[in-house]
Amino acid sequence: MHLINNIIKLLKLCDKKKLIILPIFIFFISFLEICSIGIIIPLFSFLIQDSNVVSINIFDKFDLSFSINLILITVIFIFLSKNLFIIFLNNWNLKFTNEFSLIVSKVLFSNYLNMDYLKFKEFKSSEMIRNINQEINMCTKSILTIFNILLETCILLFIVIFLFIYQTSISIIFFSIFLILSSLYFFAVRKTLEEYGKKRIETGSLYLKYLMEALKGYKEIKILNKQNYFLNLFLKYRKIFLSTSRKVSLINISLRSWVEIVVVSIIVSLIFFKNFLNAQPENIVITLTIFGASLFRILPSTGKIIGGLQIIQNNVPSINLISREINLNSTKSKKDFTNKFQINNFEKIKINNLSYTYPDSDKIILNNISVDFLNNKFIGISGESGSGKTTFIDILSGLIKPDKGSILINDLDIHKNIVEWQKFISYVPQTSFLINDTIKKNIILSDNLGNEIDPKIIEILKLVKLKYLIESMQKGIYSNIEENGGNLSSGQIQRINIARSLYRNSKVLILDEITSNLDEQTENEILANLKEISEKRLVILVSHSSNMSKYIDEEYIVKDKSLLRIK
Image 1 (cartoon, rainbow, N blue to C red):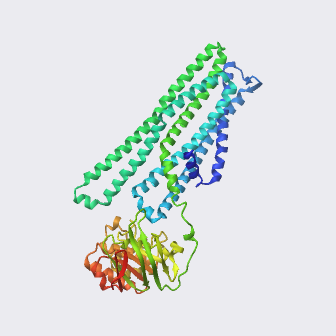
Image 2: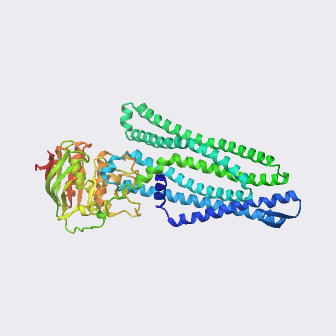
Image 3: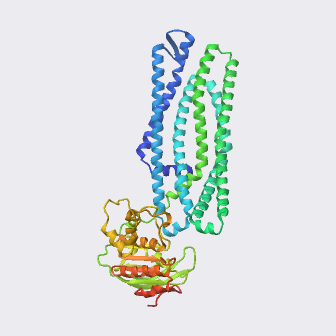
């Protein structure tokens, strides 16, 4: 029942009108399938009676006569209509599942991007990539499989009704053998498939994890000669992943052998039963033909249903996982998005009695901090590692909510609308963020580039001392940045990050340890840039550097859970 609820929850993300149409399609194609089997009766009667007009007794109640021409035209019409509609329905199913995959990917990716910062830190990037890339594909495959199971089940139901009306006693034997053998097979592999599904998710995440770590730490790994360490870990879990996938495929393939056993058992039982009753040869031929035609359609349907159930059973962990991830932000309060505030003349940030303790811990990181940061100032914050500098910046930027206290901007509480506050500020982290694209796109982070050079970007490039670098490149601001900024220096990378923050025209610029990996000359150049930038906005820099004091207007140190002014 839990699985069904999760599937329904995921399907609710899609267009409900399309789901309403599906049963109509299924009913119609099932009706055509029965017609394609039923038309065999007059067709084979013609072959036996050797006449241009065929008389048929339907279910011992109706005597009907058909011309052979009408029978042949009807056969062509039914089979042509059925197969054209099957093509249409398959196309409809594929379009729907593609739409489903896209919607679920969008919702899940959006959830990760909008997730609470502390919760986001608990996730591994390899797991998030696996969920969006692999597990959603598994869910999509399951949805398509469910549609096919519904179709094949409906077709089977129509055939069962038809056969029970045609020959009740034989049908009882027929379906008793069928249900017993099919049930034995499915229940024998059900638990195994679910366990394999869990193992596939776990090992899929691990081999992606080691792959990403190795590519990210390429330089260190090469110098330390640790290639084999990461290669062996990658191969270990990749091997388990592939082995698990192989076992699942083997179970699915073995279904065909099991179906053959079912076929032989049913045919032998039918012939034995008819001989036992000493039925007329003509009746045996017609009956075996009808059951044979039905069997010809039932067996593929059975294979699809059992195989589909195996796929769903194997994908139960994926369905439950994605359903759980989709609901990550479902309980998030909407108040942050409703109470807008307007800042016309930004004067200061006022912090009152700010305190913070790590979640699920008694360790107090910041205690009762009160301070004012005035506009058009260059503020420096230092402190030992682990003292709480970054935590303070995370709180100030709205990524973390304090346990108590308030942050006011012109006497307006930023927690009345965090989203609006974050539009008001820019943040440059210690680890630079670049995309493998043009310099312009790295600055504006948008596809709306236009063909003209934006004067605003040129002014910003001058301000961060990147104008000459851009002019030296053949394509200027349309030059590509290699992955991780491979064709730029550390200082140039940081300047592009600063340029991005300035492009937003934010009133507050927050920078966290951006000079820690720079040489002294580059560091002094960037600090001088920031001093110039602070003439039109508030700049807050967290740094260990002793050079910072020469450029900043006010300096604070995070010590003993407090923020103390030292300059």
